[in-house]
Image (cartoon, rainbow, N blue to C red; front, side, top):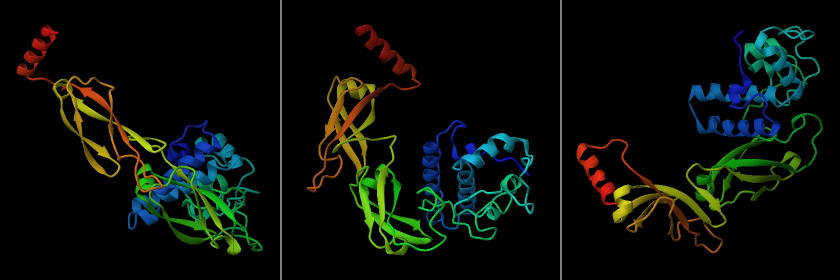
Length: 302
């Protein structure tokens, strides 16, 4: 029974909060979702592993058992392995332990889910059965109800718009995130919830390593070779809609901010904000003898 480090699977520390664990799960489940990785067996296995890790770390009692006994490879006292009653009183909220690894079953058994073995694996997709809290929506009498959840999209997806697939009450729903969507925007899928209720989605726009969004404006940075900064010239800037050309004035120093009009975030009136570009003046990592001599002359002239 090979040891699994569920914290490592989700890329979080052992002291991670519930919010950190949920956020990591959502991000990874979206990345490895079968709908986006059709035919990729490695992605499918990773997707399953992510669901297993979340099923444990999102539940305080199961997380405590894993923290205390997981590294020993021993079955916790009072908890039988597969076929011995499993994790008594546990609720896996839509996860079927029988679909999980031998390591998982060695700790929690196969009957730790309400409803017993074979009740069905809801999957680790970004859905509402595990993100809304509670015991899921699948069992018992049906009620007309609204459900709420969050949907994470990248900055680029929010800018251009994206087609997404979610699972609600075991039903796959397709939706379109409109171009120019902002963090905190709400989408409503009328009549698509349990019993005909509505699905209410809050959009969460993930941070981007290249761009910062502030109101209608974006900020990015671009590398500028030292000679271009000194003498002036054109550099190419990556924007969210392609590439733009920036004319750098002579004598520009590192950290200077310049503006590309109309290359920012879409506005309601159809126009766009601006893109602010920070100049990052660079020098070659290695210099030829001729370049070294030229830089020495520049230094001496200064």
